[in-house]
Image (cartoon, rainbow, N blue to C red):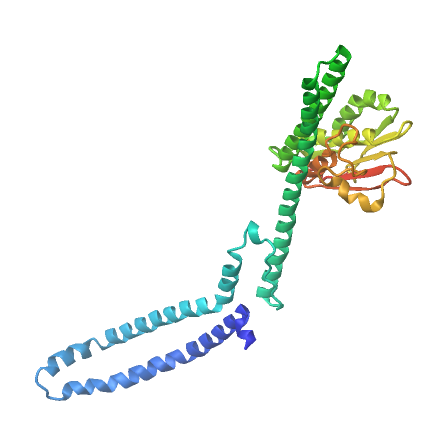
Length: 355
């Protein structure tokens, strides 16, 4: 009978039995007393040595009855403990089956088919395992990509150094070599800085204070005007007062990453428009290269670039949107992106307001 493997029906069965026994228990006790009461007549039988003991027990007849009642209660508690263990045995079996899950077998699933509470619990555990496995795989992929990103410039540095040591160089060659080494080293610094920023945002917020997002965005827009002009990009802003509860340093990094990406991945004569409003809290739109709709979600992954090239990325570390997503999640918000018409990208950040 499969229904007996369901904790709910086991508990129902036990409750039914308990009600039945509880209803008939007074009758059983009355029957026991009715059976014991005539035994008092034994004390009238003249048997040497029996009458003193018998009369002593007869005088304490009600004490014997009380002891019997206590014994019945203790027996009931013992039976209840056994019954509870029997009713919860399916949960214990489920616990034992998932207690051995670890990084080596994240693919394990309970795969229960029932619709009862145990089936719902098993389904929730399977969904949790899916999320854990996806997160673990993401961390593994992130570590592999980070290793690749670090190994590439280090290999370039090693090659440049070996070239410089192989033969005497002229002043022009030395100047070119040192410039290339400096450029490669700066890329390493940007990458390490991005990794540190991502780690810091993943740790959550140290403090939650009301911050004016419009003022933070105004400072970032003003700071990047010169860089935008150098890239022949027009940077504008439409900012209305908006309060966000969070950490100012991370919010500033969020706006900075979005504005910097919008300028970097743009075209001469293009535009970047920053908007702060109620909903969404922050919007950054640029006129960069066309972005296929199916490629938008991947832009938030670490070291993922639209061109798919790890080297030709305009000096970035490939972590800008990844850090922006991590900061948004730390502020209990949601970040999304869609193609901005025939060219460019529109990034929207929704953040909760103060309560």
